[in-house]
Structures are given as structure tokens and as C-alpha cells.
Image (cartoon, rainbow, N blue to C red; front, side):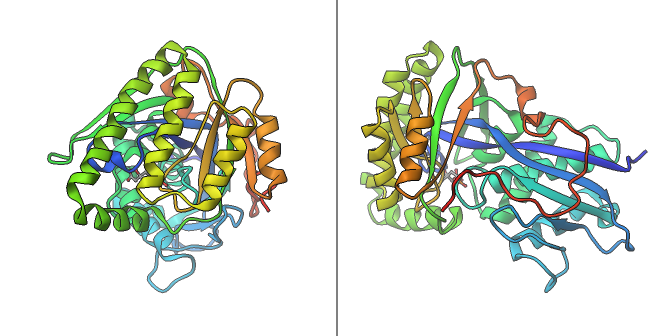
Length: 351
Ligand code: PMV
């Protein structure tokens, strides 16, 4: 039996170490954030002409997106809605999705994967159906391919699983090894926003072209990043944050060498290190977007320093011994009221 209204929630994510190399079969460490995307699902008043997606405060205008070709809304969102109909049937056409985003879109914090997972959970709750984590991951990958072309799958996998994970994909077979990693102590970050990026597919594609021209040189970089990810996992599990921060700095050096850093990201990393951060690096595809600075204590001074330099910034944390259930829990919205209008994302002080 379907409900009158249902919510789906999914957290945003950061890649702690290993982005880009993960596309070439190396392991990456990623974790869900304490903020995310919430989708309210209800039945459309009008006749089955949907699904319709609303919520202008997501950093991109999703007001009134519909799946029909040539219809309202950005193309990838329309195709993602069409994919939802393909996955779950014509009944989805009678649904309205109202999105509240607590993470900015297009910044490498997993907004598209979180939206995908939140919609999938919301649809199932609305129709009173259960869905396994494995099925969420499989279906979210179908939506992520609509958004990003040929992603490694790290974003939606960590978002659907929750907590801190190690992700590795066999590039020949496509088989994924996804393993939860236990954190003995929470990790605290200042997140800085270095402007919109040109998109994950663009960054990955341009890098692939460069790597094709110098395959041996790039292979050495993939291997080096993979090795530091394996070493960093040990530091995470034993709570040695100083050593972890050093490897984040090293990883950022490699990302710069790969050509995916920017002057703004480098400036944010310098500000963070000057303010005593243990380590700082971009997170996600780069070319803009978000960077993370690991701190020992209160992230507020680093957040304020980012803001004083004119960058959007917020504090984030990854909880100790995060459990898979975290992925399904909305930390920001504990009430049952439906958002009925477009709502703004809560990114403090975005210039
Ligand atoms: O979509 P983003 O910005 O979180 O980047 C995903 C991580 C990459 O390694 C750059 C791409 C991928 O598919 O793994």
C-alpha cells in the first residue's frame, strides 16, 4: 500500500584519498558526511504527467524538472527521472519529488549520487516496499551513469553503504570490492568551496586523454596513489591523524601533478595548513569544487579563514565507528513536515 507522503534521505560524501586513481583500479577511501539530500515524495495533484522534481536551492535549478524530452529542467535531471520510470515502472509518473539539499551541487560532494539514492529510497518508502542496500547500489549506478557517463561508482557506493569505506574496482571485470572501515575516533574537517567545477565526466575524460599520451608516467602515479591509500587506511584504523594528514598532503601533490587542482584549491590548502590543519587536499573530481582540511580539534578557525579569504566553507565530521545505518538517517531533519516549497541549501557563507 502506498503512503500519502514519504521521505528518502542520503548523505553527501567526501573522498578522503584516491580519487581519479580509483578509475584505474586503485583503492579509494571515502566517507559519508553529516549533511545530505532529503527528498519528499508525494502524489501529484494533476494526472500522471510526472515525475516532477522541484527544489531550486540545490545549487542548480531543478524547479519543475520532468522526464519528457524537451521538457522543463536540466537535461541530466530529466534523463535521470526517465531512468527512474524505466527502473520502477509507469506508477512513478504520478509522483512529485521535493528536494532539500544540504550539499552544493557540482562540487564533488556527491550531490548527484545522494539525490539518486534519496529518490530511490523515497520511491520505495512511498510504495511501502523494501529495497536491499545491494539493489540501491545497483539502481543508483544506473542513475549515476546518466549524470556522469562512466563513473567508477565510488560515490553512490559509499553513499548507499554509509560510514567510511574502502572502494576498489577491477577495471577488467568491473567487479567492485566495497568494505566498511572502522574509525576509532571521529574525523573533523573544514570544507572549502573553490568554485563550480566543469563536471566529473569532463575532468575524468581530459585526464584519460593526457594519460593515454604518457601511459607509463601516469601508471606510476596511479600506483603511488594506490599505495598511499593502503598506508592511510592503517592510520585511519589506528587513529593516527597526523600521519593521515601527511598522506593527504602527498595525495594533493599527486592530484596537482595530474592537472586536476586549481589556484583556488591550492590557495585553500595553503590557508588550511597555515592555520594548523593536519592535511589538506581537493576531494572529488577537482578543477574547482570542494577541498577538505583535516583538523585535530575545532574546524571553526579554518572555516573562518576560508570565509575571510572569500570562499564558501563549512565544518563537517565523520563519526567514529560509523555504521551502515547512518546512510539512511537524516541528521538535519527530524520532523515529519513535508517541504512544500523550494528550499535553500545550507552552505554557510557561500560568496
Ligand atoms: O563526482 P566526484 O567529483 O565526486 O568525483 C568522483 C571521483 C572520481 O574518481 C574523480 C571519478 C570516479 O568516477 O571515481
